[in-house]
Image (cartoon, rainbow, N blue to C red; front, side, top):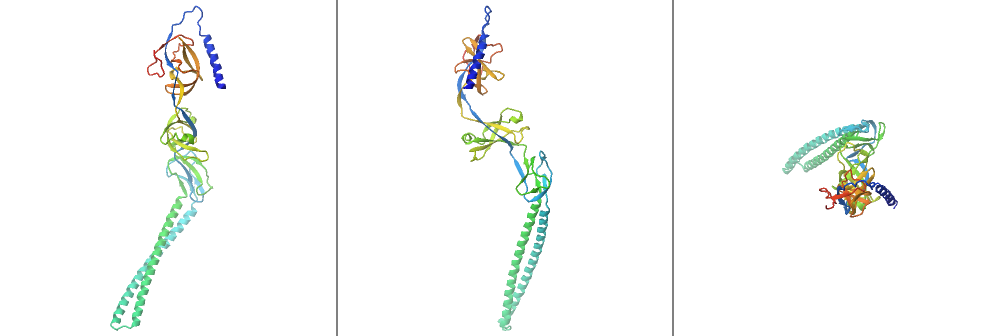
Length: 394
C-alpha cells in the first residue's frame, strides 16, 4: 500500500509538471502533428519462474585419505597445485609395512620348501607302495604253491596296507603344504599392496583445493588428508522445496547466474541430477551442469531460474518503454496528444514487458518514441512497425 501511494504521488507530481510545460505560449504557431506508431496495452499469458540459490562444486571431487595408520613423512603438493593422474601427493612412513612384506616373503620361501619336501615324501611313499605290492604278490604266489607259510603271507598283506596308508598320508601333507604355499603367496601380494599404501597418488588430473596435513602428522584410515577437484567440469547445486521439485526433471534446460564472476547475465544450463529428498528440510538437491568458463571456481554462490506456471498480466510492446536511470516511462495517446507517464514494470520479455502500475488495459502507447516527441505534443497514429506485437491498426 505504501509503495502504491508513493508511486501515485510521484505520478501526479510528474504529470502536473509535464502538463504545466505542455501548453505553448499565446500566439505561437501550433506544431504540426508528429506521426508515430501506436500499440495497445493488453493482457497476455506471461511465463512465471522461481529461483533457488546454491553453491558451485566440481563434478569430480576426491577426498584423498590413508588406508593405513602411519606418520606422514612428506607432503609433495600445496593447495592450488595442478597434478596429473598417478602423481605422488604424500608419502607415509612405510617401515612397518615393508617389514611385514619381508616377513611374508620369508614365510612364502619356507612354504615353498615345505611343499617340495612333501612332494618328495609322496614320491618315496609311492616307491614303498610299489615294493610292498610286489612283495605281497610274490608271497601270495608262493603261498598258493604251499612254498610260503601263512605267517609270511600275513606279513606281506600288512606291509602292503601300511605302504598304502603311508602314501595317503604323504599326499595329504603335500596338499596341506601346497595350500600353505598359496596362502603365503597371497600374504606376499597383500603386503606388496600395503607397501603401495605408503604413497598417496592422485586418482585423476586435477587441482589440489585443500591440504589438511603436514609432515609428522599421524594419518589414520579414512581421515581425508588432501582434497582434489577436476577443474574442467562444475555443477551448481541448489536446494528446491518439494512443492516445486515436481516441475524439475533430469535433462531439463534452465538458466543460471553466478554473480561472483562479475557477470549478471543468465546463462543456459542443464539439470544433471536430482538427489533424494532431505527428510529434515523437505527439499531436493538439484545439480546442474555448467558450461566451460575460466572464471568459475568451486565454492562460488549462484542462482538457478526454473520455469513455473503461466499467468495473466498487463503487457505493452517492449519498444514503447523509455528508461531514464531507474525510472521507466511510456507515451500514452490522450486524444490527439501524447502524454508521458511513469510506469512500473515486471517481467521483461523479448517482445512484451509486463506493466504492474501506471497503465490500464486498452490504453494506446507510442511505439519507438522519436527523440523529438515531448509531453503534450500532438501526434497522428500510423500503422505499427512490421513484426511489432500489440500494435493498433491505422
